[in-house]
Image (cartoon, rainbow, N blue to C red; front, side, top):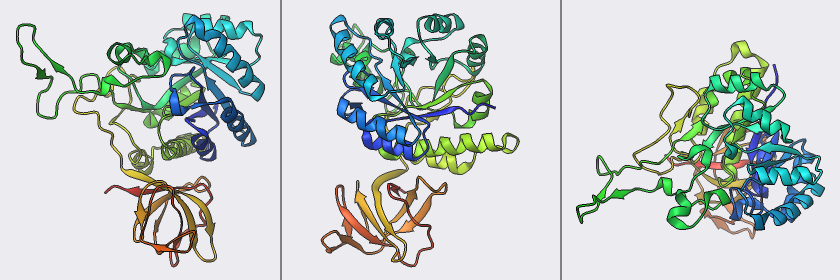
Length: 409
């Protein structure tokens, strides 16, 4: 049975390093202004070099997203960026635009080319078209059912097949949306989506001056708001269907999100492959995915009569835990842990530790807190570097770069 690749999001260097440490086989990152997540979730060339080195040192592949729909004036700049990225050692480029694909092919590159889900590939004929034009992998349209994925792979077994298994979905077909550009001037197809599908809407009859909120009750009705995808329950079927790569969405999410999703899917994939006949989805995996920031989960379009894909009540995130810090050091003899703070936590708080070297999530209780200056404090905040006393607690040594979280309940 073939082991599928686990592909995790890398919105910045910290998230990349976190995903790699927690078990990703490959990571994907945005190319400056040329991916569908611009701003703080794309890489400069300097960051790109550092990220590629880190990934490769840990046996992890690095894929670069160049998947905007480009205008003519952008192509030369994209080509220049790609040439530099190629020198740095990227393992693949993700593209959606046929013109960008043609440009990269004509450059004579040996870098593998992956076709983005934005290209809306839904049939074997389209797969063969992309293969004949230099592609090695197809990231299937999100709207395909399990049966359709099976047919796609069986019809073109030479193509690597990648699908999204977790993360945010879009009301538009595989994310190709014009709503943001129409309402805000920010194009989703150039990585600037304002997410107007998450807004609450009102309507006004043509023959009336009064405006009405589109609602059935006082909570309002979010008619375009999508649930988040979660295919944890269907890993055996997807592996049997021949899916080559399981992709997690979320380059704009936190390092905690990257750690938890990678950790859960890594454990699930490895557990199944180790003993398929004994496999079942563990409740702890479900519970852990409920801790990260998400909207209500769905299995999307995997089954014709599956779960709903829209959530018409509100667009708020569900979040079981807050990301409060990163372990910088741990002294087993004194049971002292040094923490780089990200959100508030204090003495007496019960925290959980996501350790990249330990499968189980450990629970601790924060004792006395000291700043690096030696000052005793009751609470730490973002950017604080503190040492916490954990004496008397039966815990395994904590690895550097472990993620510390605090329950919201």
